[in-house]
Length: 185
Image 1: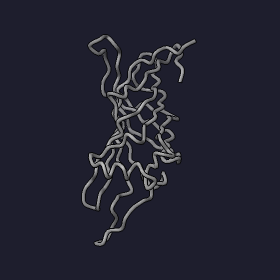
Image 2: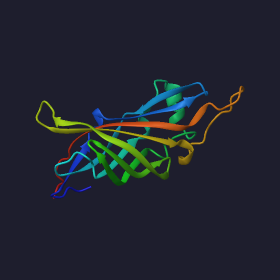
Image 3: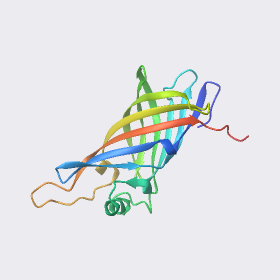
Image 4: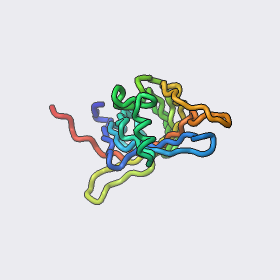
C-alpha cells in the first residue's frame, strides 16, 4: 500500500496488537487463544480514522492457548500446518463507514492455503499521541468463521455424542497502528 496526498499509511504495531479466537470444546465450554505476531498496513484518508484499506499478515506459529501440547497440535498438519502455511492473511476489498467510529470491512481471508470472503464489524477504539509525541490509532474488529471453510477439518467423535471441537470460531482483533515510515525513493 502506498500513501497518496489524501491517504496516510499506518503500520500495525505488533507489540500492541493481537488476534483472539474462541471455539467450542467437548460440547461443554469454549477454548480461547491468541495469535501474538502480526504485521501489516492500514490506509487512512486525510481527516479520518476510518480505514479505507487493510492488509494484515499473521504468523501462524504464534498461536497460543496456554496449553503447550494443544498449541503443538494446532501448529501440526491436522490444523494450521505451519510448516507449509506459515501465515494467515487478510486483505480488504471494501470498507463501509457505519457512522461515528464504526465500520464494516470485507476482504479475502487466507488460512491454510484457502481464501474466503469474510466480513468483520470494526470500530475505532481510540486515537491520539503517545507520550513521545507519535500518532497512534487503535481498532477492534470481530467476525465469526467456520474453520471447515478453510480446510481445517480435523475432529474427534465423543463417546457420549458430539465432537471434540466446534466448527465456528469467534474472532476478535485488537490493533494499534502508527504512521508507516516513508518509502525509500
